[in-house]
View (cartoon, rainbow, N blue to C red):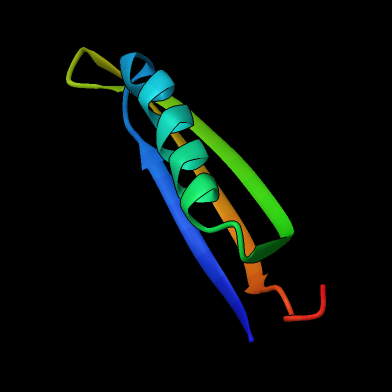
Amino acid sequence: MEMVKIFTQGTSDEFAELEQTVNAWLSENVEVEIIARHVAGAAGASAEKFFINCTIVIFYRKKSRGA
């Protein structure tokens, strides 16, 4: 069965934290096989405040026992 894991952060200061979060999840889930991934970013301004967002979507499945 294929599954999806979504990671998202909202400011550039948090991108290092996003990287650590994704790497920690991968380290804790060595039994997964990544099928595909998608990275999306968005930036803009609202009420004179700049914002930026990064989302990483990982499509995965559990590795078969023989793999």
